[in-house]
Length: 464
Image (cartoon, rainbow, N blue to C red; front, side, top):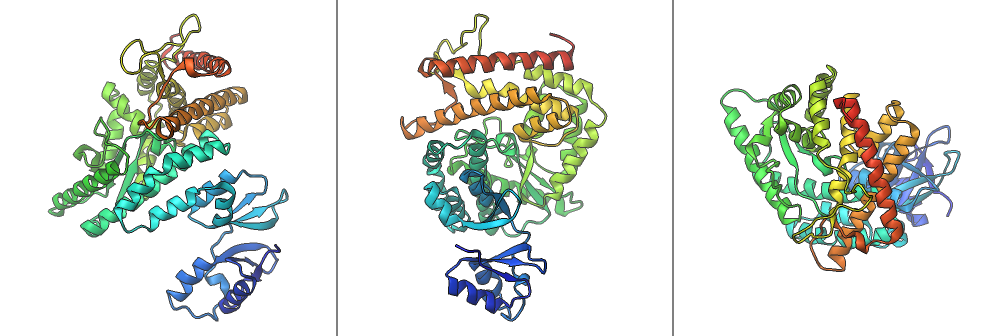
């Protein structure tokens, strides 16, 4: 259908009439030069006009969403869904090769094209007023991921989608906790680390989270701390019930050690970098992949700026120990190019693909920290290293493709365990159940990973 549009100066009433007449759920808004600068949807009318009692003679630009979010016409359906999820929108403008807007798509259309929609799941989580609905929605995630895999979704898309759903669950749980405990007594941010912080979650994941709150002095400091500890306890407990299990290492916001004011967090980071004993190195592999999930994000920005300042001193001893720690995990490939598998126990004759991927994650982290680059996602880190000429284009492509292949196998394994074997997801792969091509591909990847570990060893430790 032809695009429905109106000028910025069009009265709200007239825009609504056009949408009703054409039976559309959205209308594009153009400026005096004829360029589309925003969009007004039926949701905008409900929330900004009807609910707020706004005068319908006001110009439509006062309620439009801007700037207009677009996607090229040749982008996969998955990318459109992910963009809608990340921006919390239901309409997306489609552009041709010249950048001209040629159409609009909606969440409903994508649901028809894709089947069950992650957008719908996230919207259900965001809208629910019942914690039980969150728990039940989370249980549908494996089936949704299976459907996306069957539709050809790539591993990086699946990671981001699973993480986006986890973020929606976390944000809703946090709002429930705030409703129950009352307004927070100080500015805070709920921080996520590890795989969720890197936007690399799979279906088998535990919690890695923490709380930063602003420094409060005097008599109120004790009550502020008590509030956030109670808050962390509630959030972590509900996340566990939703399927995001407690962290075995207690790296959670309910742990008093990881619920601290900003000054303490800055002290932690400084100590880990300047006194890199084994526990400090382990903590840095978790906490340096952090991002803010809810609250005042300026607190995480201040912590990141502090990290950059610490790294600007080129802390060679810290990077030396970080590299040494990463080299403890070797790809599961023997001297004669045979797979190294577990010899006993419940995982006999299998290897842990999460561990097999860890050297790539560690490689990307260490080199970006050395060059003071602040990306946290592994693929984004590799891309930054290529842009800054730390990696050659060929090296970047090798590591990127290796990572994506391993992640795809890992997620497929987890989905199969849940949906077909009715078992909890795990990361163990039986090489005998793989095709010859898959076995050869994995062996080549593991050989490649070993070479990059040697490169890392020489660069940071001076050893081969």
